[in-house]
Image (cartoon, rainbow, N blue to C red; front, side, top):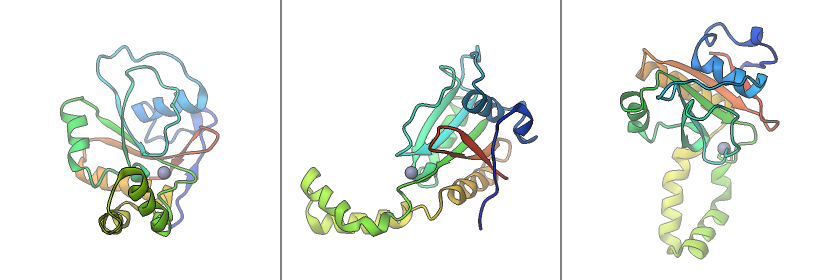
Length: 180
Ligand SMILES: [Zn+2]
């Protein structure tokens, strides 16, 4: 299913569901250049991002806690979000996929991946191949926006009191809203 992507160029573009929430604040910081700290001792937002997506997001120090997974998906790390809620105190999550995600098509790069583990990390080829075959299936992302949307749905069902949004990080650094 193709996801509906909604840009944020002004405050009015922020979807009603995210206005007045830490997700709305994230969109205002990143897309609209909003300044100002939170003044809170605890992070307001959990951001989940792809392993590859390392470009800094222009948010105030202490505003967000960031965790990483393939395509921003944490379903293989079931305790991470629980920790962020129970110990770090977050009540909102932004699942951020990104354009051009390399986890799409991961399985097609098996030979190079296995060779890199053998040559770069000292693995035996058979063990590296088995490792890849097991995990690449679980970590491959068919479509970055679709994976973020599915992860947001999963997290809403699992943590129903939280505000959970799916976003897409574009190459120009801006965030697109993925319609919930
Ligand atoms: Zn990625």
